[in-house]
Length: 123
Image (tube, rainbow, N blue to C red; front, side, top):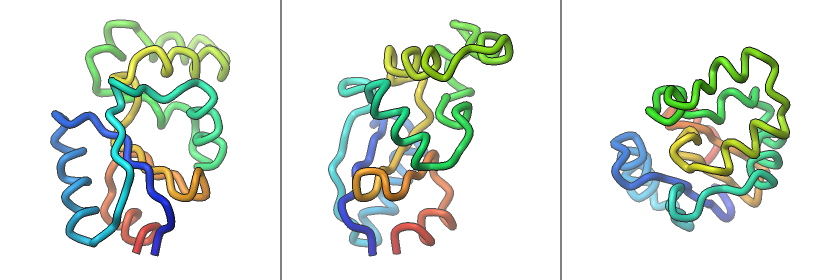
């Protein structure tokens, strides 16, 4: 069973709502954080990305309008530094892939909602 769980979400996001229902259905208590009103900082994102072992690109909401408007893929392809990428992510919660689940301060980091991965990590 998971320890402390931080759940970062955008309440209007259907995937976030589905993930939140999954947490509730499985009796997992969590701290809820609105990803736009309380956007993750560059330092938090860097720490979580390192802890997750995932490529930095996985932290971008590639299907979001802001991602396309800002031409983020082109910037990443052109060799944007990790530091600049984290700084960009920290400017707008809509750029960050969601939901994000941080277990025990970063012992585990889940990006997006994949039920099998969540079962393995949280149950």
